Length: 551
Image (cartoon, rainbow, N blue to C red):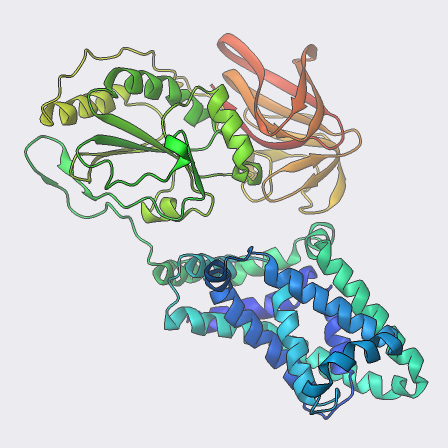
């Protein structure tokens, strides 16, 4: 089943916009001098290189102490060198002279096509989908099994077959063009150089943005089906880490299982000399593992309780470890997280889990999520989302008392969890937008498009006006960009990014202008009581809108 899914996913990659910058190189590669086997050697090198380096490049580079983009940059440089040798015979001769002892075979030999294919495998950037994501995660975790290798090969063969057909077609065309002599050679060099420039400046991503999301639609019918998700999750070793039957041991708190270690952490904040922290080092303490991200309003509302517990119980043996697993791309940046932890008065250790490795180790699915670990390293309580602060504090006190510690009095912090029925969290990016609550012009993902506001909005619905580029996670404002939302809440927040202004009106009355100067959560509206209103936002060009939350 995985082989079939991998093959079809590869074919989808071969017809996606992301492949376009590589196609000219495939055409010129198949058009090169040599036997009829050359196109097969080129594509064979591409598939082999992609398979090997997708699964092992990270380990190889880490072992050699090289940056993660070293091989890609080296391959791009090689493409420029090959292009230069096609454009200038003098440069080609100068290049060949120091390497003459290696030239046992003519450049047109099919083996040279295999070498070019190996280079292409290092710069080939297919459009990511569930299959490629699974392969990448397993490779990053060094969990490469036989099944993973077979899936990667199947994926490679899936995109390799259509590209082989293109290379064979290019060879047929080249036989007619080769009569032009030097002009054909120089033209091939120009094509190769332009393609290398496109790869260098990430043209595949731009093409995917502007040429539409048809490949995503195809992926949804192959890679994102329930059957595919089930098999890919099994390959990843998915499953709730704390789903086993619970038992009790010496208290009313159940034993939910052994707490996984902090794995794959990029870096640490708020530790001595920013050194890594392990659960083994924390044995003998009660540990609250808090999964959060700094732009999540639900996470922010838990912080007063975490600050109070840390202040009251840290000396009695409580440690809090904030595992910052980003939801949006800007939350991967260490400087942004440092700034946010300072502004939010987060003084306990924070682990930057940019690759979701600790998130996966806990089989976590929520922001915020709390895992309370006892002094022997066992998870004794979990809670997902806001609320139940009293129950969590009682569990902390119970585990501290079981350690024989003198426990201070309980903290009494007002619970800011919304109890009224308010507008649910609302995403603006295409990947998570709720289509049942969107009104107005049809969404055109990953391309610049003009939208018209809906004349009427039911409660909790939103609509777009003016020009927008709707990406997977965010919407980027263009000329005359507007957004309307019929909300029901005390407070309205929006995660914004970029630089510019957002002018806010409620029920037709201007209320404030928000100056956007970084990627974070901004308050748009605040009221003492729950309010039902029509929010109208006007955006400067280039401002990014991610997600609304409500209080």
